[in-house]
Length: 110
Length: 111
Image (cartoon, rainbow over all chains, first blue to last red):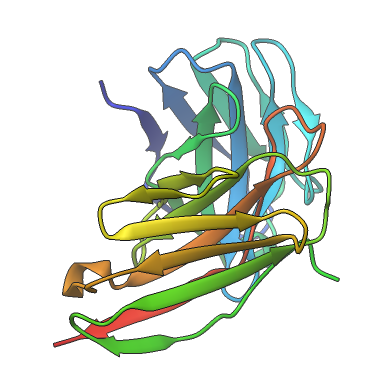
C-alpha cells in the first residue's frame, strides 16, 4: 500500500517548456487535489477532482490543466512554464475531508 | 480577515515543555477541522482531527470553540521529534472535500 505517489520528484524547466506531473493513489479515494506551496504563502489549491472524469478549478488555476481519466490517477499539466510557477507541488487524495499527501515535486522554471 | 489565521512563530521551547498553538477561522459554516504536521521539505501529514467535544491523542490535545471560531492544539512533554510546522486546516463549507490550510506555526524543540 504505497498511499499517494508523485512523479517526478524534481524537475528543472526552461521558460516556455511543457511538462506533466503524475499523481497516483491506491486508496480508492474519490477526491484528488493539486496544491502548490510557496514560502510565506502556505498551500494553495490549483485544481481538484471529485471523481473519475471530473475536474474543477481551485484558488490558483491559471497556467495549469488537469485530467482524471482513471480514478487512481490525477495529472497536472503546465503547457508553457513560467518562472512564477517555480514551486513545490503536492498532490493529495481523500475519501472526504481527511486528505493524504504525496511526497511532492520540486519544480524550478528558469 | 484571512480564512484561517495562525501565529507563524517560531516557537522555541525546551524538551519537556508544554506548548499551545491557536488558530482562528472566518467561515462560521465550516464543519470539519484538522491539525496537520509538516516536517522541513516534506509533505503535510494528518496529525489529528478536531471534534466539538475536544479530543486527545497521547501528548496531543485539540480543542474547538465554535462560538469564537477558534481551534487550539496543546502539546505536552515536548520531544525533539515534535519540531515541525503545524498547520491548522478547516473545510470550506459546501466544498465537496476542499480544505483551507493556515500558513502554519513553526515549532522548534531544543535539548
